[in-house]
Image 1: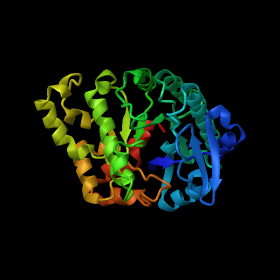
Image 2: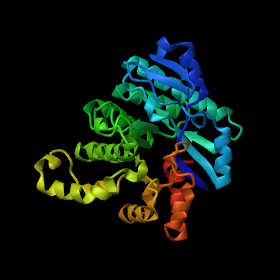
Image 3: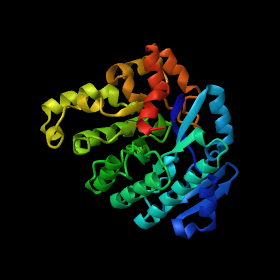
Image 4: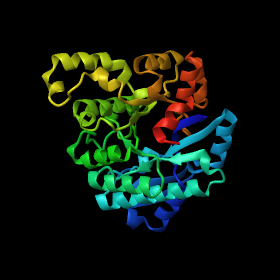
Length: 330
């Protein structure tokens, strides 16, 4: 059973609700020749929401053509809404989660997709409450969060209620980069995506390590997309830094290489040699197939790189779907 754990989806009902009552959510819908955009609070309008981001039928046909039986869906993190006041942010997350759950229930093949919840991470307690509601009431498999909250790092003490809830529920948390550091130097050449995204994932992971979040919540299940960003490739530097810098040891109890094996990773690294390196470093049991559908930066044939990595058949099957089934309890 091939499973893609990295699929973005924005239900059309979300846009309809915002258009009908923008004040309730603090979000307005704008349209131009390129398509609909969302203006969230005081942020600039988003990029256009691609048609493929808002539908499931064409997506299903593409998955079937690739032999992929199941895709895990979550929001486009550009619309996470962390800049909203907490109450509006909670309403916005609830709207996204209930709309996603309804889309999955009403789809002609409900077994084809499952969902990860959006949570109002600007308020840790509200994020915990929304996660519990989404998992217990809506059937979500876990949560997706950004790599930072408009500059607040993921070891921020205010997020403790969320981490506690995710651990208690056994709900995996997928971290996806957005609001990346250093954007003022990455305006050209698509660098905010090409360099900024993997960089910000690495910063998020390092904060979870050195900030003690992993030590406090060892049973958490955290997935890093884009092959973990730069983390697997700078782990030697982090490991050495832990030995020579007292600041890195102020909270963290373990060597960074131990934390490297604690995370889960998707396969979106584009080169077979890099996937082989990732598998060598963390083991086949920590890697999940991911495509980043429907964006052009994604992998249109995510199973191909896995099969080319030369793993034994049993390990290939784990990466293609077995690990996801175990992690998300399909």
